[in-house]
Length: 219
Image 1: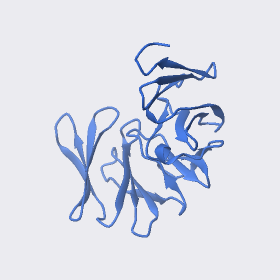
Image 2: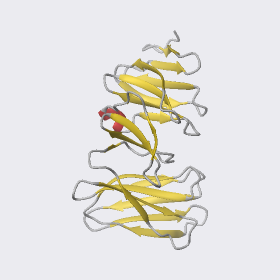
Image 3: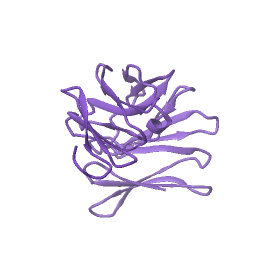
Image 4: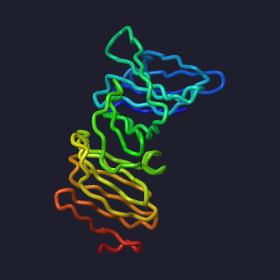
């Protein structure tokens, strides 16, 4: 199962999925009261669960038995909790969902498309942006307002984009990356490799430097 908080910590969502159960329970954290249960299909395979940044909507992606990716979402502020849904294209590769979803990152015809989680409409197409298997698995980061996005792409590259235009702002290589984090404003991106060296990319200066070496000494 999965367990995620809404960004405002008002709700917690619990995914229970197996041969005998397919359900998402949403609880109010202050009271412990279950707000709603959303039933699913045991034949489907969960691919991602996330709240919106305001904690008012919940989105869930599944792979159906026919291989198609289906997205369902619910408005938690509406007492009727009417389900909404849309389908991804057949050849789409969906990246892992962050817990606060501003967009879905989808590789479509070797380019990364940022889709609106609630309509499926493209918000941006990123330049030269074929995410690697590591990038699809969740090795990406974005700024607090969703304006900047970075991910691991083919060839051990880390690429950095402005999401409104899709323009690439920079790239560099990191061997065996293990962690990635972006500053809230998107001004800097930090990536740690498998040996513990941390590379900092400065967006405004369009350059990077290694902050910490393998031995832990500053360079």
